[in-house]
Amino acid sequence: MTSKQAPGILIAARHGERRDYIERDAGGNWIPTTSRPWDPPLSDAGHEQVRELGRRVARSLRQHNLPPVSFVYSSPLLRCCQTAAGAIVGLEEEGMTDGGRNLKIRIEHGVVESLCEKWYRSWCLPGSDGTWGYCPPQSDLVVRGGSAASAWTVDVSTINPNAKVPAPELFLSPSDMEERLKGSCGEKVQTRSDGLIDMEYTTPVAPLSESFCWGKFESRKMQLARAKNLTDKLAARHPNETILLLSHGSPVTHMFEVISGEDWTAHGVCGYASFSTYVHEKSGDGEESIVWKEPVVINDSTHVLNKDSAEYKSGH
Image (cartoon, rainbow, N blue to C red; front, side, top):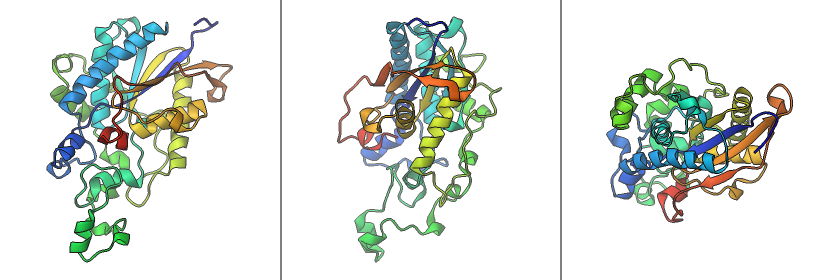
């Protein structure tokens, strides 16, 4: 690709396999075993997936003659930061970091999960098991004298109290996240003397527009506006660099929608550790001058999604 000035590259990826889904599908429930039910980690298989994600991104950049990764941004939720850590290991193994620099993770609130009612239901109700939009089983409603119509009704006095606080208060601090990564992401992360979290990145480029909590949910319109604000601001900040974003299924498809102008179905459901690559150029100064080109890669995944799987049904 030739240009008077090098283009900017934005790679948006979904996290790896979630531990709570694995336990649920095996007949268990991870949610009541933890003090942080909204923040499940990767499974063992997920950790393997995300290192391969870094390698695949590196090979894709080489294939398309695009520059190596200069910066990594992640959702503040643990599974995405673990994905970022593993992807960085994979990128470094392939020698695809800008100037051989040691990449660090910038925790960015703008790429967090969709803070809609279905997300809250997945972890904050009695019986929640990680299922997106969880509702009590019909048998439970009958035992309590309920009806099918009451399945979506919530007694607010019974929900996890953490659902009532502003969402950013649920996020780990950078120092706490660093400790979690060192304890869960393998030897190459544990032995890294300079750490993986960028402690100097303290002001998100795209902070959440409102203090979302139970009863004050983020609508789809808000989610799309967040995706546009985020991608435009990051493109303006990194006009000639390659950045990697680690996020969740819904935000990744929202980014596709606002960048391409197409419906999310043209992208498809995100598999674990799948990614898309977008090219942008500047026609002047400011965010309004960002011009998004035809996507280079759309929803690249190492495997075909099983439509009966939790991975396909959730995309989160």
